[in-house]
Length: 420
Image (cartoon, rainbow, N blue to C red; front, side, top):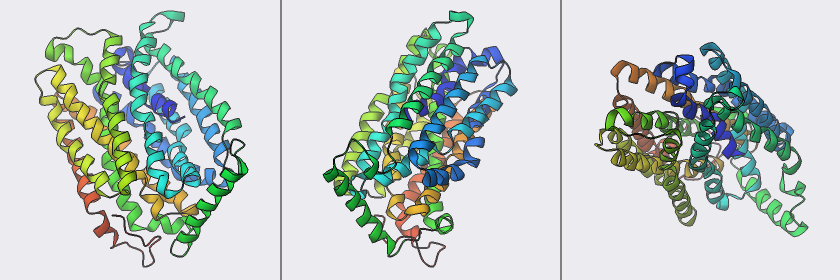
């Protein structure tokens, strides 16, 4: 489900340099705005959607979200103007609102804390693997230009929409809201898992408030949101503009790649990123998640991404971008294992959604600012320094998280355990 989610969200990055920008007359800033305006609808409905999932159950709500965004993605096949593109991107954001924090909440309701970092890593593998598999797949669909009288980029949107609708329908019948509802667990497994999760909730109960409002006012939640903002800024600057940067190799280095070859090159940084994500998260599980498991990769990404576009060959550029991708994807799953250590119940639903909402403001800012600065300067070098600065802020805050968390705005913190 997360694989299809990230593919549909970032499909515009493949379409842009392969006909969409030319057919609709998009500048870099307009393309960036179209990519980022998705998050306008997404952000406003994030918290209400996650609270609805907590109330109505993951099975119904996640399945509903998936079918809805599949239908909206399908409509991109026939977009004919810039205003229509903007409107559909906003609608797609509204349709997807609540899916990611809902999935994180769903995993927290199923997986004991000591196993959560590893499970989150497996979940997060979907993002880099989306590009590893999705970029060549999108390129293959776009290579069928003219089929059914459609441009290649239109065929690509059609092709990635259908799986979302189909899997959403399957999820309605397959997902279970809690372990006791799972038909594929035997009674002993249900009892063990339910007991372990109940023990955790009991331990939290002595010092954790279930109130959503208290979670929304907790200083640590807002601190986590700022850290997440920097990480997401890097993620989406890379995801939305890497295909365009690779397309620019022709003018910069004189390369001659076809659409499918560009798709394969786009996928290159993400396979090592998937491996790095898995190994880093396994180390976090073995040692116990520490704040430096977020800070170190954020720092590496902050240093590497501005350097990438100063390289003097396509190979060197992709090599440095690969380091950046490894850093970003290594930080994300370990980051999401931290909020569940001081949030529970409705507080977890609200707090996780708030972190994701504030963080995803970067989903709008990153592509728009990147495109606008590129139009102003004629190069992607300056925008990448902005990415580096924000990731550096995330790294500094992550290393300082434990000390800063002690100055929470609440007299009664939601959780009392140390984060290091």
